[in-house]
Image 1 (cartoon, rainbow, N blue to C red):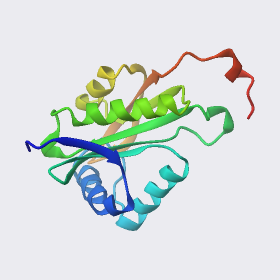
Image 2: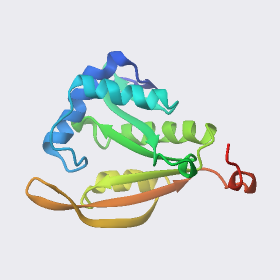
Image 3: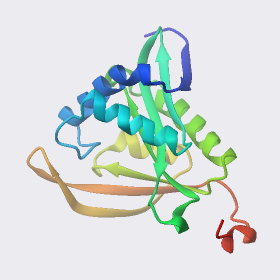
Image 4: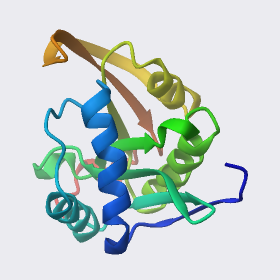
Length: 179
């Protein structure tokens, strides 16, 4: 693919392409611990939840084709975690290594920073997922832990790697804010 890369907010009309790309990873990779690929209705609901939480869900297109996507979700539901999000990034298999993930993640981090989020967590499926670990390290994430043997897929036990990036200095005003 040689065309110009464009990123934009995901729309419900993108769900078919999002579903197809994610289906590939569910069926062939350990980057997600899902075993059964979600259908378009489930992917539509997931998109609506992200957008309903006023969080970014971005897609990358080249020559009118979806070549990657990323999004942020609340890290945990309790109010004390309200300044922390978790990110996910998926790139079309024939486009890995072309900078698409880096472009998407950089834009996602900028949106999260300007929206007032302080911390971004990446929970990476499989400690052997070196492309995702390298992507996050390159974006300034640091390795904060590994949970060993917590997933079972493709007849083997899998780890999750936890990485974290601080987006802003934590102000003392935010500590006592119960808003």
